[in-house]
Image 1 (cartoon, rainbow, N blue to C red):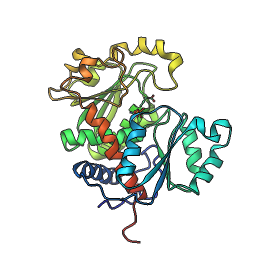
Image 2: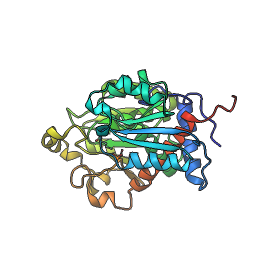
Image 3: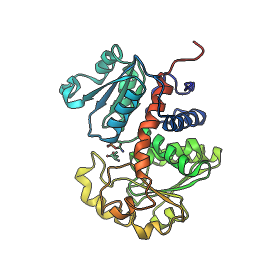
Length: 316
Ligand code: CP
Ligand code: NVA
C-alpha cells in the first residue's frame, strides 16, 4: 500500500523544486516497491487522467498510459493539435474545463510559463511531462535507477555532460533533493541555469552532496559512477542544430571519455539517443549502459508519483 506523502498529496508537480527530500524519498521507495510487485494495487481505480502532448513522445506517453492502466485508472491522450487550444482557446479556459472532468492533467508543452499558467487556473493537480526548461518525471526515474544500482544516493558522484538543458536542470534539482554529488560538464553558452544550480548546490550540501559545473568534459567525468548525457538538439532547438554540434562535439560520451569515469560507472541517457552526436552506439548498447532500466523506471516512478498525488488520505 502507498500512503501519500503530505508534500505530494493533491499537489502539482511542475519542477520538483517545491517538494521536499522526505517526499521524494517516499516516492522513490514506492517506485521500487511497485517495480518489485507484479500485482499492482488498484490505487487509481475510478480516476481519469488527461495526458496532453503538444510535442512528440514515446517513453513519457507510454509509461504514463501503462502505469495508469496497471493501477486501475483511465487515461485520455490528447494531442495538442487536436485540441481547441491549438486553434486559440486559452490555456486558462482549457484548465478550467478539464478540471471539471478529470482528476489530474499531465502535459508536455513548450515554455514552462504555459504549465504554470495551466496550473494557476486548474483545480486538479498538474504534472509536467516535459517543458523546454524542466523534465521532472525523467529525474524521478533517473534517481530510481541510480538508487537501484548504487543504494544510497548521498554523495554519489554523478556526471552530466553535454547541453545544460531541461534534463540537466531536473537532474540538478533531484540531486539537491537527494544529496547526489553532481558535476555538470557543459561548454560555454550551453551551461545549465546558474540560479537553479546555486539552489541545487545549497540543497544538496544540506544533505551531504553538492552540485557544480565545469567546462571540461574529462574533469566532469573523472571518478563518476554514472555518466549521463542527453541530446544536443532538444525539441525547439532545431534551428541552432549545427552550432550546437560544433560546440558540443568534445562532450560526446564515447569509450575514451567513459574511461575517465569510475571502473563501475554506468551510462545514463533519457533517450531518444542520437548516435555519433552525444553518445556512440557502442557505449549506449555496451555493458555499462543502464538506459533500458532507466526507461523502464519511467513507468514505476510516474505510477508512484500519481499514487502519491492522487492517493486517498489514510486519515480521511
Ligand atoms: N525521455 C523521454 O521523455 O522520452 P520521450 O520523449 O520519448 O517521452
Ligand atoms: N532535452 C530533450 C529531452 C527529450 C526527452 C528535449 O527537450 O527535447
